[in-house]
Every structure is written in structure tokens, then in C-alpha cells.
Length: 439
Image (cartoon, rainbow, N blue to C red; front, side, top):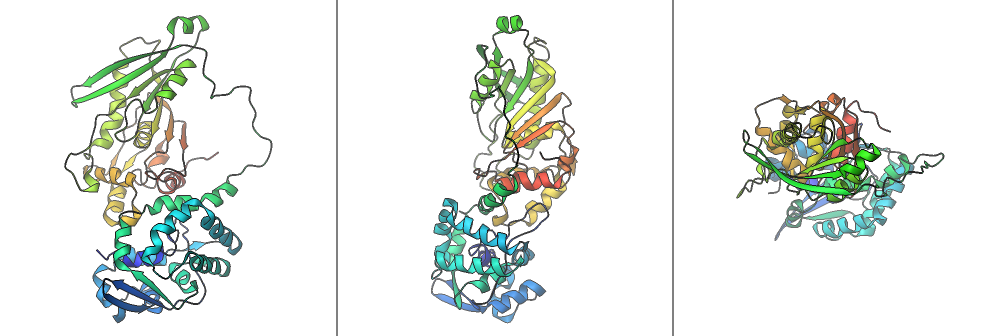
């Protein structure tokens, strides 16, 4: 129950302290002030010195004052205390200011501050600003020292309650906003075009609903098929590339219906499928919410759909030239079909060693796959020639190099507002670990 406590001592004070970026930098350092931490658990209190916490972080040896917590001081706790970020002091001050002004920060602080009674928003901001201005490399202990008061009190009961409610990876993604906004700004002439992709196409759209049954795998796949008006399309000599849409976890085939209709109005044939419900009823273990083979079944669903459509109108269904558009878990599906290799040994390592603070909802789906027997796995379908992955859930399932196996032209979209698949851990870090080219 108290295992994450010392992580909270850092995260509650600065939840971006453990934020990692492409080259594995992380956040925190500081000046001089707070020297003691008072830990309250109901009517009981114990005070430990920041020096003892720092000593444990550096050496791994548990001081006598922290002996009662020894059973809970795992290597992941020590790693959390030692996480660092190399940051320019000028930039660091701006990042802190941007964070504190954002609506996201107000929401986070409203949740976190009850665990540190006596610590106000202003006091926290002062400590962070001092730390950011004085040090190039920041760690959690020095941020604590920069808080301008002698003793910081932590309510252990509140901290434990917060553990199951706060999505730290989402907050870390939000915290990058000011840096990304500056770093991704491209100077020069703006792109202009006479074509507006948001405009509806000229072709009327027809929609057909069917259910395809894969008897070998006992999977029923409802699909909606969006086609441009055949007669008009023939008159206009419109080619019909085939687009397949894979929705997210437990989402229906209607989730991106607007996109299917829009693309069909421009001459595309679109097939939106609905993957069978995979929720394990009565299951309370988060890493077993779905069957282990769900990460295999989803790409195979699309391959089966292509097999089924290949026997129909070849002009209407060009199953040898396919684009897959996937959202969230469907984004994972699209990338797997494009050739991304599942690295299950690396996924097992993450799922076995990560704490509740390291995981987001998308990780629980991926961790279900650790029960598969394989070490690596490829689900590539060479009929898939292009892929668009929207907020894909791919945090650790492809490991450090699985995405580098993708040779298919691929575009990954990422959003800073997705709390289920936060951009930092689920898209940006996996992308940075592969030999991909950003534009």
C-alpha cells in the first residue's frame, strides 16, 4: 500500500519530475530550504531528513530513519528519485511558468495538494522556479530542497488514494506543450493550396452493412462498406483505392463513420469494421482485461476482411493496394499490419517492473499480451501499402526497435489531449526509438 510513497514525495511536488524524452532526459533539481519530510498516516507521524532520502537515492542503502519503509523501497522507487533532466535554466523557468498558468496544472494541483497539507500553489511554484533557474540538471531531492519552508508534510493516506486516480503520463504530455510549441514551429512561407481536403467530394455515397464470419477463429465481423456512386465514378473514371478503418478498443464501426462517408465522396472505397468485443467478463486484473491473443486477432481480422473482399468486385475492392486507418488500439493494429514487429520480451519486462505511476490505460491492454508464448511476432500483411495511425496505443508493445521494421509509408498522428493514450509514452517515445524520419 505504501510502496509508491517516496515516488509521491517527488511526483506530488513536481509530477513532471520523471518525464522522459527521446534521449532519456527527465526533470528536476534545486537550491536550499526544505530539510525534513513529515509522513502522516492517520494519527501516526514520522519525520525523516531530506539528507537521508538523498543518501538512499545515491547509494541504495536504507538509513535507520527510513527502516520502517525498507520493504517498500524497490529499485523503481530509487530510479524515480534519481531521474534527471538536463535543461537550460532560462528555458526551465519558462516551462514552470507555462505549466502553472495552464488549466491542466490547476486541475492537477487541485488533486495533488491535499496530499501535501501546508504546501500552497505559490510555495510550490516558487520552489520550482528557484530550482529551474539555478541548476542545469534537476532531480527530485533538489526540487524538494528548493521549496521555501523547513518541513514538508505528506499525508500518506491521501497519497495512496491519489495513486489510482492520477494519470501522470497524461500530465507529462501536457507539460511538454510549451516546448513542443516552440520546437515544432516552422519558419517560412505558409503552405497554400487550391484543394481543401475538408470539403465534401462530388460523388454521392452508398453504404452497405454486412457481417463477415471467420469460422476458423470464431469471429463475427460487422462491416460498413462506403462506396462512391458506381455509375458516376465510372463516368468520371475515378480510381477506387481501398481504405480499411480499424476503431479503438471496444469502439463500434460507426466511430469514424463521418470519415468513411467523406473519403467515399472523393472516390475511395472504404470498409469500416467492428472488432468483436474482447472484454473478459468478471475480470478485475487490469493486465488481463482482454485475452492475450487480442493483439494477434485484430490484425488478422483485417487480413480476413481483405481475403473475403478479394472474391468480390475487383474494381470496387482493390485488395492489393490497401490503406489502413486506425485509431488508438486500431492504430496499433494498422502499424502491426504495416510490419511493426511485436517485441514481447521487452513488453514483459516493462509490465513486470513498472509501477502504477508508470502505466496509462493503454498499457493495461498491451500488458495482456505478455501471456503469449512468442518473444517476437510479425503480423505484416503485404497488401497494406499505406497506414495512418491516429493516437496509436503502442507504448511498449513494439519495444525499442520494432517500429523500425516498418517499410510501408506511414503517418502517425498524436494529440496532447488524449488521456487514454498519452502522446509522450504512447507515440513520441516509441517513434523516437525507431529509425523513423519525422517531417
